[in-house]
Amino acid sequence: MLTFAEARQRTLNTPDEIAAYLAETFRGTQEASPFRTGDEVTITSRSGLAPEIGIGDVGVLLCDLPGQLHSWVLVFTAGGQQMAVLIQTANLAKREPATEAGND
Image (cartoon, rainbow, N blue to C red; front, side, top):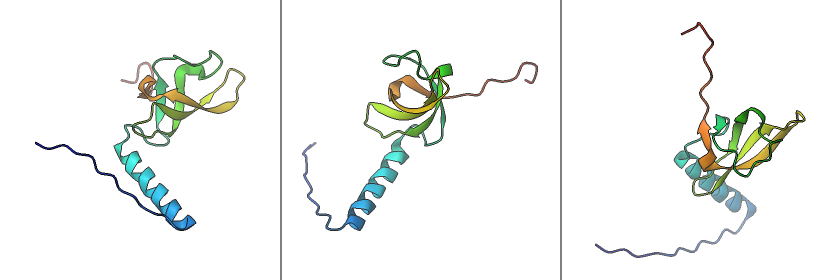
């Protein structure tokens, strides 16, 4: 077996080339992500979150990039404002809606 590293250099000459490259990279990372933009999530650990942020321990995922420690999540504050915050991705899970009593 042989393991080696390769370096690749690429020049992006125009704003259109830069935008296309970033969009391609984003699409690739989204495919590898356990979450999708718009997913309802449960905050499974409040580590690093102030008590006034993430009321109800729920939110909506705005952006999750694989390989990053944090994801952007839209949550409510105790004052009723919506706020985008960074939460450790390991502290999130896809939210399962609660079933109504008697409707099993």
